[in-house]
Length: 226
Length: 326
Image: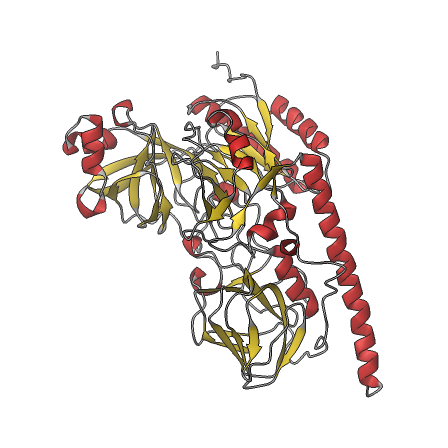
């Protein structure tokens, strides 16, 4: 028998006057995230033929749905979401992605300026931090923050640290970073609040390519120290 | 056609943006002040959301290679001709070949818009001409404009709009109204320290110098660290609380996903005001319910439509007067 899909309580919160945030869970979890992407796919289809409905944005455990309040009532959008939640059952990703992407990483030194601090704060050697980070097969839970940035998990519990108190104003493109149980790759020079432990030359965003994001939700990723 | 002589601190091409690509991490971008963009464009008979120049702060000089008409909207950045005569905002001006437009520095606001007849001709990337550097989207792979860049109108040689004046009394810029910015509560006030929302509303904030098109950082009392949340999507206007307790208001180039609690969201009708705030400006917030936010949007849309209709009617009179030789 197939594993029952998670059907936990769903919260629909206001996100300003022109969007609703559909919260399907309160943790980073593969089954919850599968459901997020199934719901987002369904809402995306509705958005294409319902005037005033914006394109849904999936994250880890929630989907943001913008709408034009001059065209659509909030109540009508909530009804439509309720109907979509009823039909977004099942399990797995809407489009399964089977390949495992290897990401070569230069850990530490100028490429990973926070590696020593991460080691000190987690009580490990730098070599252990690298070994732990590279030991796991990660999944892309969502893409966001900046174009092509993959939110990957789960980082081993031993490396979980809160984000930096004040974000850096500039993180170099290609930086590999961790925060909590998440890891990611900065596609461009941007501000960022995560701990930088290494750097890769793999381009994760190219607007001239289809799809422009190298890593899409559901894809599996391995970091390889070089 | 315009030639960039000096770009100033940041000169980019922006239009109504590329909403709907958040799933790829692509923010809406577009003009920080959509009202100012619409004014500039409508003055030269371009669609309200067409591509125009976004001039930041000042220190920008443009030169007409061929005689053209420009619509000026947004902030008053002290625009003037070579001879020092002012170029009023909210007006369509004729710029003869060889003449220059200088933006000397902000009298009021932060961003001005320069529109050309029918809009600036730019190839769209991912559905929009807006410049967004981290995604390498827009003119020349998303870089800001620099000296020597040339910009052409979609309708070259069209000077019909010269003399058009925005009906400012009918439809004043949202940034010309005083009073606190609205904030619609949610979605994460529970993840913020106790009474953070009350403290946010009670305090007077100053826009920090490390603000840009991604977000406005606010200096003021620390609201205390928010709890980390499971990262969720963001939109422009979202007020995030990072661990240092000083709020950040997301703008059009802001991140599409974030892990700090969102105390509330500034409604769409106040976004043009956010786009005109400059470092050192004071900011206050007042709670607003969602329905009131929608009513403001509706009112703003009506004002813009009425002003556009007035402009069209004026344009007919201008042309008739021209033909009469008057």
